[in-house]
Image 1 (cartoon, rainbow, N blue to C red):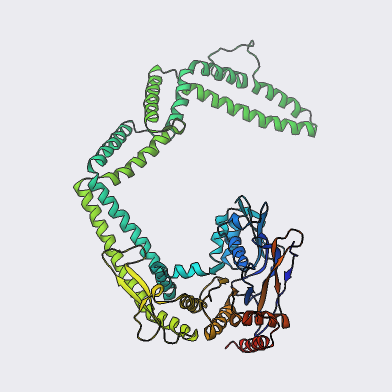
Image 2 (image 1 turned 180 degrees about the horizontal axis):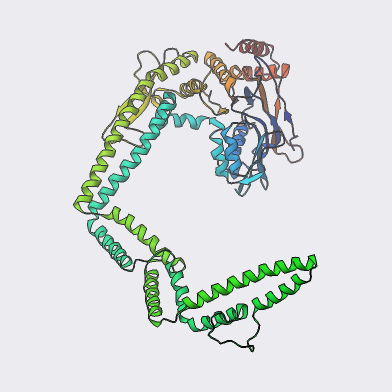
Length: 597
C-alpha cells in the first residue's frame, strides 16, 4: 500500500503572505481514487504546480477537486471493491456568500472556523456529499462551487469555441451594469414571448377556448346564484342542529338555570317545596362565615361572594339563551335548503374536505382563467397591443445591449491581444464579430458574437477554434483568464495541462501569468513544463511506484524543495534528474522565475 504523506509547503520567490481575499482551500485529502491510495495535501495560497511522469496520476488531483465540488462521480475511478473519498478544508472570509448557502443547508464551521466538504463514491456508483458535518444533496455542493472553484482544461478550451460562451465572456468584460442590462433583457424577452404565445394560442384555438370559457362562466353563474359566504357551511350546520333540537336544548338550559338561580320568573309559583338553588346555598354559606368574625373564615366568605356573582351571571345568560331559542319549523326548513344548495356546490366545484371555502377558491381561479381565455375581438386587440408594447420595450433593451457589447469589444480584444503578445503571439490579432438580428432576439439579446483570431500578419481573421492551433487556443484562454483575474470573485482556479502544445518562451510567459493570477487567487496547475513549474510557490510531485504485496501501481504525492526541486525540474527538462546540464538549466529557470515582474 502507498504510504500516507503530508505534502508540506515549498515556498520560493515573492511570498504570498495570506489567502486570497475570497478564500482558499487549505487542505485536500484523497483516498481510493484511481492510483491514489491515501494522500493529504496541505495547500497554500499562491501558485501550486503538480508535476510527475506521464501516467503517474497527476490528473487525479484535478479529478479529486472536481469530485469534491459536485462534479460527476465516475465509479470507474474507484478502486476495485472499494470506496473513493475526497475531503477538503476551506478557509473563507466572514462575508463570503458561501456561508449563507451553507447555513441554509444546516452546515456549521469547524472549530478553527473553516468549512469542511466531503464526497464519497462507491465502486457501484453511489455517491454522497457532506458539507460542514451535514449530509447534503450533491447539487448543493455544486451550487456552492460556482462561488468557489473554476476548473480549466481541454474541455474548457472546447467550451471557449462556442459562440454563446464567447458572448458571455464579452458581457462579463463589459461590467456589472451591462450584466444587469442583459438580465433585464432576459426578463423582458420572457414577458414578450409569453404574451406572443398567449395571443397565438387564443387565435388558433378559438373554438376550444370558447368552450372552456363557457363552462367556467356557467360555473361562476351557478355559484353567484347561491352567493355562498366563507365558512357558511359550518355556520349552517350549527344552526340546523340548534333548530332541530330546540325543545331538548330548552329543557336542559331551564333545568340548569333553576339549579343555579331558582325560579326568577314566577312561572313555577312560590312555595317551600322547591329545591334550594345554588345561589341561595352560596348566600347562606357566605352569611354564616362572615358572621363568625374569624379573619380566615371572613376571607373565605369573600371568595364565596365572587363565586355567587359568577353563578348569577351564568343564570342570566341561560335565561337569554332560552328566550332566544325557538322551535321554528319554517326557519329550520330554510336552513336545510340553504345547506343543501351549498353542499351541491361543494360536490361540483371543490374537494369535500375543503367545503364552501374550496368553492370560493375555484371561483377566484375561474375568474382569472376567464381573463386568459377571452377570445373576443376586444380582448384579442388588447392583448395584441400589450404584446407590441412589450416588443418595443424589448427592442429598446436589445439596442442598449448591442451598444454595450460593441463598446466593450474593442477594449476586450486589445487587452487579450496584449496578453497574447507576452505569450509569444506578438503578431496575433484578436477581434470580435458582432452580428445583430433585431427581428429575432434571443433571451440574451439580438447579437451573434464570435471571437476572431488572426494568428499572424496576413492571415484572415477567423473564428478562434478554426484559426488557432491547440497550443494557441490554450494561450488565448489563459489570456482571457488573466484579463478577468482582477474582477473574478472565484477564489480557487485549477488549470489542467492548459499548456499542452506550448513550449519555449511562451511556456515561461504562461508561468509568469499564472503567477500573476496567483496574487489574487489560489491557483493549482497540472503541468509538464518546467518553465511553468519554476514559478510555483508550492511544487508537488506525483510519484508512481509498485505496491509491495499486491503488485498494484500506487501513487504518492510529495512536496519538493531545494535540491529535490532542482532535480524534478531537470527531469522535466531533459528526462534525467542527475544531469549537470539539466540541473544548471533548472537553477537558471528558478532564478528567472524569482523575478515575476
